[in-house]
Image (cartoon, rainbow, N blue to C red):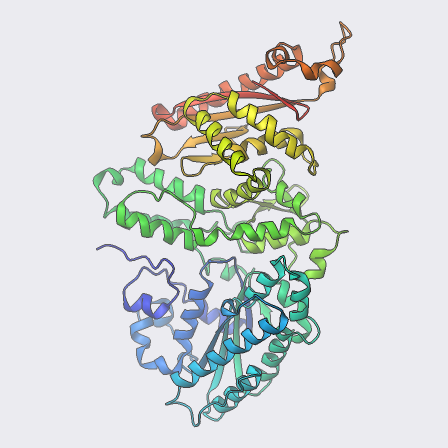
Amino acid sequence: MTIKFPYGLADFQKIREENYFYVDRTDRIALMEQAGDQLLFLRPRRFGKSLWLSVLENYYDLARADRFEELFGDLKIGREPTSRRNSYFVLRLNFSEVDPNGDTDAITASLHRHINSCVRSFNRYYHHHLPQPIERDTVDSFVSLRDLIDVVAATGHKLYLLIDEYDNFANEVMASQMRGIDRYQELVGGEGVIKLFFKSVKASAEGRGLDRVFITGVSPVVMSDITSGYNVVKDITWIDEYHDLCGFTGKELDDILSRVIAECPDEWRSSEKRAETHSMLRTFYNGYRFGAEEHDSLLYNPTLVLYFFDFFSRYCRYPEKMLDQNLAMDRNRIQFVAGLPHGETVVNQALNIERPLTVPALADDFGIDALLKSEQGPAFLVSLLYYLGVLTRMGRDPFGKLQFTIPNLVVRKLYVERMRDSFLCTFEHIKLRDEVSEIFYTTGELGPLCDFIEARLLKVFDNRDLRWSNELVVKTLFLVALFNDAAYIMDSETAIDRGYGDLSLIIRPDMRKYQLLDHLLEFKHLRWEALDDKESGAKNAGMRGLSREELRQLPPVTRKLSEAETQLAEYRETMERVYGEKLRLHTHAVVCIGLERLVW
């Protein structure tokens, strides 16, 4: 029987009624009841938070008591339910539905409309259970909310409030180029509407009938900025028990893969094909860690996994685009961080696998003012990128500092595309990049590619913040020029035994039928001063005008090329053992002189 994957579906009741694929996390419900009455849970966008709220809504809703066995009977919580099951009126708000456009008054009005709309739906849904209709204030929805709680209190039951994406519209406002920071501060500061809302929630939970609150979001920034208005919430984001509340483990992915491949033609059932598919999934989608300890298993992004399997289960082939376009907008989040003080440096350094970003500890209580300070270390910026899901924890360095890296190839693409867009901003530049990279992919010819990088990319980068090693600059520019996840599995540092290939392009398994080549590049760098000939007294000042062939004959350049070729020969042996006869490997040694000239 073909598995139905709930890609884009966050309705627990529909998933259960229509027999969609579901991984059981309901044992965490009992843990959350013990954790506290008002909880905050943060995860990146599109990571399964809304589905978890739907689980809670169905579990606690008193109007669904007669459906408990149908919805939860065969799940973990169904076998050991808590005493609070189906005992609440449940009100669910979703702040992603609030329009972030317009001035502060317009955004405030949109928030009030959303809350009033939810109160109206609540009134209709529970009308048989309420002693009287809820009165709505069409201007001030906080008044409507207070009346709702009062009416619920008269029933002898209590209210469970679910707030999905609490920081969504505030983050959209913050990142906007139209007075974004100013409008954001008006919403969260002083008597801003977001702060007033949470003050109202806090007051309602002080014996007035609001018993429990569960909030999801992406980062702690908004909560930090309104803390005085809502300082009663407990953040369970990094508690180990909830590490895999959202996301798939490697074992779960293995189980899914086994079930899906069983429905595909025989060619997919070989151990080689299975390993190939698992490798694709791991490279593109794995790498997230949310627990407090490094021993926690890495998680797969659930939206991306469901996107992949929804396609694969239908056609028994890989999707051409491994990135779900719903996650492509995370590039805007990276761009926002890059625009903060020192943000460009931090974002660009994230691409450097040799020197991971490090901070003494994760920042978990910081507001917009901390992000805007020009005199600060990278802790707030790195932490924000981690909350956004575009960095992940990879362990600790010898000094005990936390290390962060880009989690997978899908996210690396977002970084590369952001940089590419800033370097190549005209139709002609993009067209030329496509032409020279295609020549390289299919023939291995470096000339047109290096000419393009010299003329366009090196000159642009020369005017930027160059607190990088020069070899990293060259690697990054080649990565920007060549990145193509539709044809290649790309990595800026491919581990080969104890050595590293600076940049590898390994053909995707489903693309080997085309006229593409595998590539491995090794980069070396020389300063112009290193070209001085001490024996003859020749100085480098006149060498900038030499041709590429003349530069290649200079002893320092020859030595660097020889070093790179020796390394590449060693890497080739290892790669041929790993990939076997299918490998069509071309190796390339490149020397960059003074961030101006390329020789190969």
